Length: 257
Image (cartoon, rainbow, N blue to C red; front, side, top):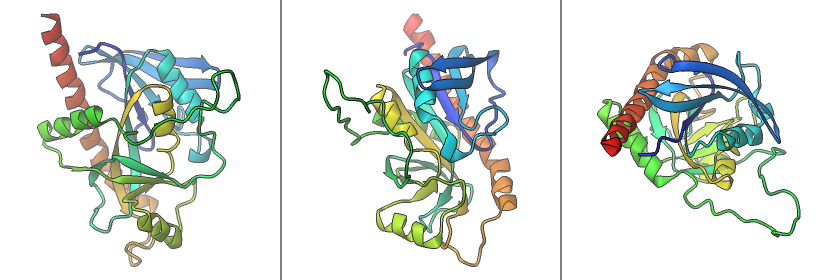
């Protein structure tokens, strides 16, 4: 098992990871800007934690510098990135509190910086395969960790990404549903595609906190509802991540033996 740092990227509800030891808060400079992050150890393994919205949750989703975020992780020699997204449920079968390990995405954003390969050069145009943008091996690790932690996680789903910071309209959700979207958020893309371009293995777990607009018209979206679901959902997600890191720590010890 590699001892390269594990990257953890999370947003709303995940201001810090209390399980980290030997914590160091840093601002890392990249060619795309600075990134505030935390380095530490978790079960003895190195971890780099990046809060997407910055310290104090001050950066709205449409202003996140995803290129700087991913570049910082790559520059710190992270190979694997586990992302956490708080989402709405497009699939009417999803309930608030459900966890989904997504395996595909829809990019419905506009005007975001979406690639590291934007300039012409001697290497020519670069096209990156996104068939398995969410890495199958890392996804399997997450699902196995969830099982070991006693948490039910839906295996597979399509993350539909809109710009925000407003919630989507019912018509936009119907459009995403027609294209196969099962959960909706504001931050998962281009984070996933940039990770693939940077050569990182990336997987993501979505915490569903509300039915998306129009899915249950009688249930309006309220921040009170979302915060209540996060109150119970965030510890469950952290339990899955804790089991993932613990398993990796055990395998690392076995490899050293």
